[in-house]
Image (cartoon, rainbow, N blue to C red; front, side, top):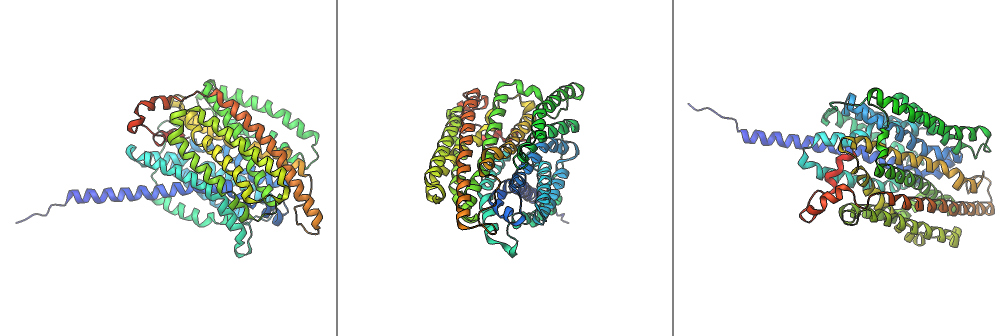
Length: 522
């Protein structure tokens, strides 16, 4: 008489394979979400002239199409992270992805500029619910020994999104699929979002923070009001003739933000759950890093809008031509980012970021010289050196700055510090887009788009020349911002604590940047 015994090793191996498959699918879902956010933050710029031509949007509406997303995303990041901690990261991730997909559909079917701006704001708010859960879900899904590799993949997706966004936007806009012109740049999110929701429901694991901070709705409302009182008149003021109410609103904005700071202090004493942990700014490195992040965000927001409009409205290039011209920038940025984190910053510390600011400044000066010298006759190959320099400089800054700054913050506050730090960068971008009213559109003036109905060849040439003049004017602002970034970088430590701690073990493959990525969870 024999008894069959289950093959325990085979059963355990099968269970391990199933668990591994489940984790890989979950990773694909959250990385796709991160990719969608990055692409949507950059894909719109290349389609702006097409949007303006099709919808009749004013220049201020064009600014809000991009700034509205950045502002809503920034203001919702910290709250979105806390909601995930309280109610479940999987639940908030799926809610954010569903809302993001719906908002993308509203953007794609927008009947006019107002509806498009509103849908973009909703899209940014939904991204703020979705994106903070990505790294948290990765952290709880994968065991510690696998996280280094997974966070490396996350970094690769970030770089890929930066490279692909403008190109995808150019291809979809130039292709004019089904006669929809710019609309497919948003509608492409629908099948991706639906697939992500279905797979996420099945393969993501729910998790919550054991002791989550409360949501600070009043603090969020005060911060939103204070920032809108600054950004709305800054963006709309030029087209409204700079009315008195705009200056009154901008002057009152710091007062509202001061009330926000006072409330945050009281909130911290009351229940320890303020929107912003103000004591973090007593850490000199964090305060300086936040200043760098804000200034760099302003430069980035202004540059990317100006660059796109210069290529298409000033030089008369199509979306695909403009998108391909940006390839050297994207490749240089992603390459420099990888090299800076893995090799340069562990060896040279702060000097790498300062070199990045100077390299980017040199690229802006080359761009400035070429725009002034060649005018509307500027060619893509002539612009390539400036793009390579600016892309490389940006990569040397954006990749290591977060780790450099957050590593100086006590470990128990790293999550809050990362959330504030990322929010600061997004706010800087929104402010840079608002400043384009003065730095760029103020030079162009209230004129129609080149090649508009009834425009003669001479008028079109004159208008293109005005866009070139506006570009050179804005580039001086960008250069000034990069000088400020370079100066603020001196306030950072020469080498972060993490770099100093890792230095002795570096020759033997000690802790690398991927292993420190959990500090990015907000």
